[in-house]
Length: 139
Image 1 (cartoon, rainbow, N blue to C red):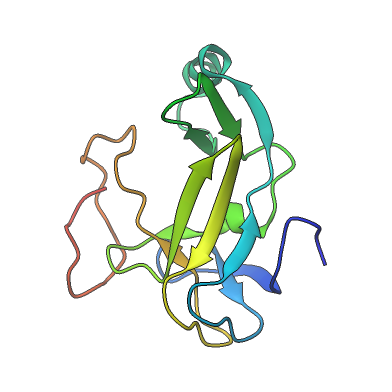
Image 2 (spheres, rainbow, N blue to C red):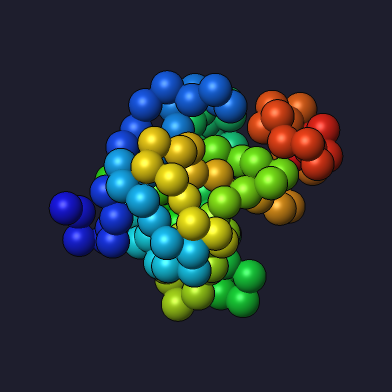
């Protein structure tokens, strides 16, 4: 098992978008799934990479109170495939240069892992395809 992972997770085709992360075992509520892998870079370098590769599969997570970001498109692990859902079963915590994922509720074996992305660089203009009953319509 990957050192950054506490549960077995597999990547496969998603009904939400592209590829997704799926639980290979039951995951109890309120448990840490693991840390998202990637490269810690400066906020300035993160902005440069985003501008340099518009539309590319860059997975950038910025930290609120630190001038750094995690580029999860570099050395990525299964957690970087967690798709957005307005009714997510996981949440992420950004702290101390790490992006940690936790289960919000018990997750069944085979269930797709999702997180509410909250504010993104899409500024609420990207159509949401999560299919949740409480879907906001845009990310």
